[in-house]
Image (cartoon, rainbow, N blue to C red; front, top):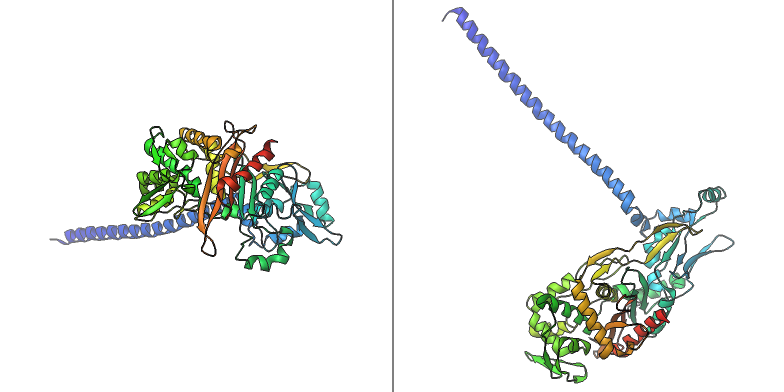
Amino acid sequence: MNLKSKERKNDRQQRIEEERLRKQRKKAKKAVNREYSIVSYFFVLLFISLGAYMVYFNGWQREEVISSPYNTRQDQFEDRVTRGSILSADGETLAYTQTDEEGNETRVYPYNRVFAHVVGYDSNGKSGIESLENFALMTSHNDYIDQVKNEIMEYKNPGDTVVTTLNAKLQQTAYNALGDYNGAVVVMDPQTGAVLASVSKPDFDPNTVAADWDYLVSDSSNSSLLNRAAQGAYPPGSIFKLVDTIAYLREHGTIDGFSYTCEGSITVDGHTIPCFGGEVHGTEDFTTAFAESCNSAFAQIGLDLGASRLEKTANELLFNAKLPIPLDYRKSSFSLGDHPGNPLMMQTSIGQGNTLVSPMYMALLTSAIANDGKLMQPYYTDHVETVSGDVVKSTEPSVYKQLLSQEESSILKSLMVEVVNRGTGTQLAGEAYSAAGKTGSAEYYGESGEIRTHSWFVGFSNVEDPDLAVAVIAEGAGTGSTVAVPIAHEIFNAFYY
């Protein structure tokens, strides 16, 4: 090979090597650029996410965060705004701020104990509507010019007024009707979800919460601060037969053809379930068994349905689930465990066993039955207005969930009407309004180990176009027909007469 050939070969190899190095450098540069791009995209995405969160936080979470009793930012509002008033739907003042000549402010609750749990208090923290609507009460939408004048003069601006859904007449009636019994009453408009009354006893005086605080928080025997309407947990007794009936309908599609012969009790695996007072109901169809609240029949229904169907239905009806309640509440619970025996199945089917419900939950279920199966979103605030009466915002009724089918609702309505016509709720019959319902007598052990009975009633009025849905529990008061039904009767009468 001559010199020129060697030179050409060397040149070619050099060019190949240079090309290889160039590609290698290009590849390395691409890798670096890709790394920079990934980092850049990450920070861009982080920035966008942060921006989106800020929009969400300021748009949707702002009021909730500011309303929190743990948020010290509220102190800034208190320097500039006098806390607004809370009114009932029928125009009664439920809470207002009184200012003396020296500028000292006192929160006043004219109805004292009557609205204690639902309206709440504004000292030693906040509760009830005082907490729920804290942002609105501490915000002023008063005339802009007046606001500027007040700030220049170093006067506080008046906070907005919260107009609730609560009806003062119904609340007072429910409070008086419950009397000396501990327990709760919830009254709702089933077609809108508006809470019209919410009573809990034992109660407290919100005017003296600060002075009574040490006693209230240490009073474990009465738990007076506990809102039993939403946070109570009670065995449902026979009002659970509403759930049994829905489970039966979802298993069989109809109640036609059902027949059971009641002999006053039922015994399976050595466990006996008696009917109330040992009454022998004889041969019954489903309507009669429901109207007379036959424990034997429904214990057998539970055994026939089985654990899977009963538990599935309970969960579909929002047991063990979050509820659409804006105030603090306790979930209603249903549990049969992994291997329930026949005795537990029988007890559960008549509302004993491990099942616990709140009065508010039962009011929601009853409302859905009354409203063709539609459960409306419950709410306590009708609207917020300025001190001069201009509406700032209002609540529009909305459907939360179709809890039952219209056919299921229709069948349950007819069954509950028969409870009033010829069953355990006949005290509600013969009025200018129609009524439907279900009684319950739930047994529990008292402090001394004795068996006592909670008195339950759930029902609704004006059956074809329902006005009120009611849930009543009187702790340790006896059967549902003797105490809870008369309480509901007084509430219905106060509304219609």
